[in-house]
Length: 194
Image (cartoon, rainbow, N blue to C red; front, side):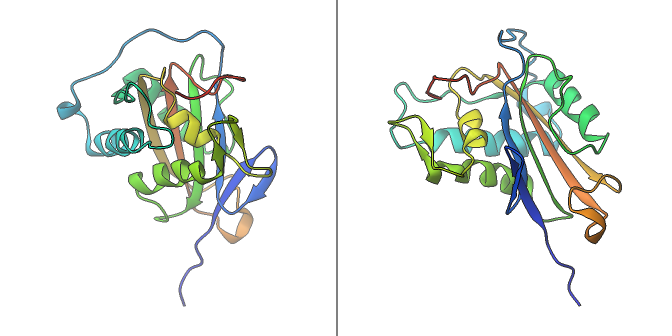
């Protein structure tokens, strides 16, 4: 018998098909500390997450950003914050992340790859109206807008297999927690992502 696959999105307190929360921008002052290492020296997970984010930024077409969105660099400090928080296996945003934006997601084991979780976030583009800078009623767009936020320059991510605090309850006791932190953060009220 196959094991069921679960994914949920937590958006404004409502559970919908996969677990994630929109980017929370943290504090209001951007962090200008540049911690970009040479991408060729990064572990495979970091390279894959960086590649997935940058592919999403390069694919923005409606409207086409002018100038084009710059690729993100990897932020080792943001990755450390993400790693430390993911290790706690506490579903929800990290209130102690400092001046970093954050996208989170949870799923049953092996549901997503690194590219898959970023794609799930950026698929929200279908509900985002750039002209009005709004999201369709009852939908979530904050993950997408954080990934493509022009002023964000770096990202650091982590994933953790958790055996406690499952947001899915006893039905799925083992789950995977994904955390990406962004510097500087995006999603400022009243501003378009690019």
